[in-house]
Image 1 (cartoon, rainbow, N blue to C red):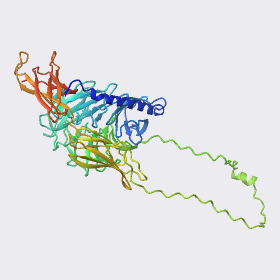
Image 2 (tube, rainbow, N blue to C red):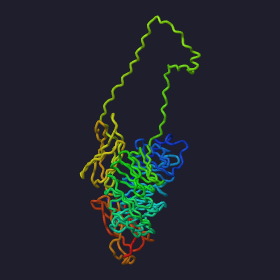
Image 3 (spheres, one colour):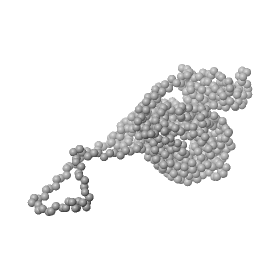
Image 4 (cartoon, rainbow, N blue to C red):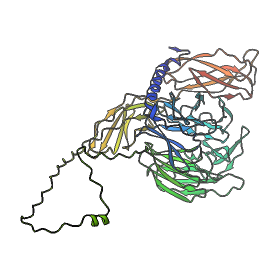
Length: 605
């Protein structure tokens, strides 16, 4: 089968689904969903989706108060919420729902760019969603813009000017998406074969090279001279996206330590902090403090810029999420969005319980046959107006008091039984990962304490346990091209209930195209050595044994090429050399079946 201009055909059923969701959400959210008169724009603070209540809440970071909420039953469990200047976006695994910040009115619903949880950036000109494995960057707004990076990416960073910087892990290119730009510019590269990641120091992007333990500023599109870190940083290290009072926060999770490295001209000695035993999965900066997330103990730890501990604060069980807000505070959301920790600039942590507005329950009216007693006079008036009657001699024995009426016996509560099967189990495949969503199981007399998520395939099986308030989780480290079946089972004090299965899903590698310089070769009169060479094209993740049209493009004026048809192998990959080119300093790229490659700047021969 040959695919030409067919990328839209596979998406038409999704368009129908999106229209249906918009209609349903509009009906569910009309009327009472909007506060009277609307609300002001929220330029700071944090939005969170409470999956249990099906409601989006806005938390004012300074006061830690909830000042707006919006019922959103159509959102995917476990969705994250990001905000731009005028709108908010509820980002789930199956849909992105937009709402207005001024009127809390639901807008359009769109499909995500990839089946993975993106890194969200709330910055000027944004917000942005970065799908690292798929190599896709989405700018949310009136019209969503998707930019393809042509390969997997490291953790993104951003500057106050609204630029997003990414590390292309396949080519080691360091690329910038400027504010309002619709294409990536990759002005420089890290050394070939070196590992590392990006951070921002003094609002400038910096590449931390873990192969040489040096930090390199990126200025004027050039890879700057390295400054020695003074510590040994492993390739698995993670970096806070911004500096901590001028220092780079380096998390060595495997070594259970954190480094605070000064790369400024003052160049003070690095500080190393030995961390308590735990599983440290995320690191962030709140300005003058480091924020660490320990998933093993469900704890958030904060340290000042000199490595002194500030606070250790527990979070509910599950898979909490850490995000840096537009107001530079760090927010830690619980798995179900029911609790949020607000981390201020100095590392102080303040918990916020995310719940709906409670209305007082009116007292029941008195029975219709009951007549209210007459008003009672004050005690002094009672003594004057109602003197005690004179004592009279009793001729009959006093009447025996009537026994009080027997109280109806409350039946003994029924013992709890195992929970019901979780409804709506859905599995969505990604790159070596599967995201699983489900509904709340019937508790059957005992609160659900855990959900067990089991997976099985020809490549292996396993099980993961999450808390009773969790409705979504991601299974990672799976085998691409293997078919999995997922079973979700609820547990309460009486034991495990009946499991519910998803449909079969198959993780796959993301579709990527990478362009580089190939074999040097003269071509006709218009392409001469030493600068003339073919483009080398590597495509992966496509359908196996399928022919695709690969079409080259260039910034060189007047460049045209009819393209080439290429057939993938049994793994969905193809590597070939074609498309002679010799315009040094111009950029070239290739598009096939809607997938755009990296932009490669042509080097001299």
